[in-house]
Image (cartoon, rainbow, N blue to C red; front, side):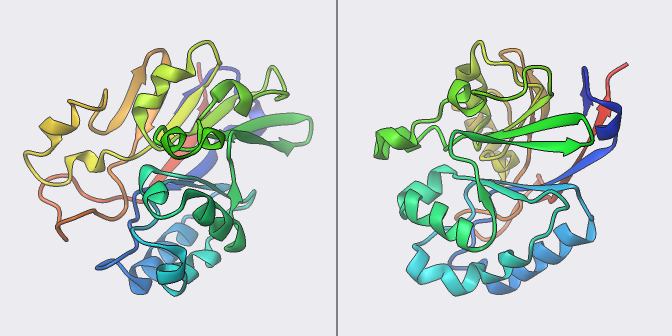
Length: 239
């Protein structure tokens, strides 16, 4: 992903993204172990977990998600909620993510430093969060408040349609999921009724956005057409 103004120190910075893992009834601890091994094999600088990690309560799934505590990124593992976390206790899953060693980005950012060079990674709750609690309303401006003004910004947001709500806040790259790439042909055509993109890279309302097909699946335990993915995003200096 070419980033305008990316410092030389961050040229080649690698972010491993997982999203829509959906640990639950049919995707269990074994899948969490497989995902963790795959992510760690990438030796990424950072790991982004962009929501819909589960389908169930913390009490029910604590043992199933436990292997995700082994996720490793040089600068950390960063987690934002998806809509499914809110069906099973959004705040509880944020707390569990933190217990697993993830940095939960709830309208917050972190600053990654390489000498004098800086890169900002921010994250917002899912767009559905505000329906459950005003404190879970996503806010891009609040997320980057106080961030170094000239540092490139990466935003983690579960649904690509959040790009429309970024508005005047500068975001150099947004990483999203939610769509599953349609998961089962021809469901991808229904995805377009709610989301601006089915998957892949697009500039949405001025925000460069990569939307993953998702790592697991939801509902029927199979995919037809779009493959699941663990994504490795490499930041490069725009020329």
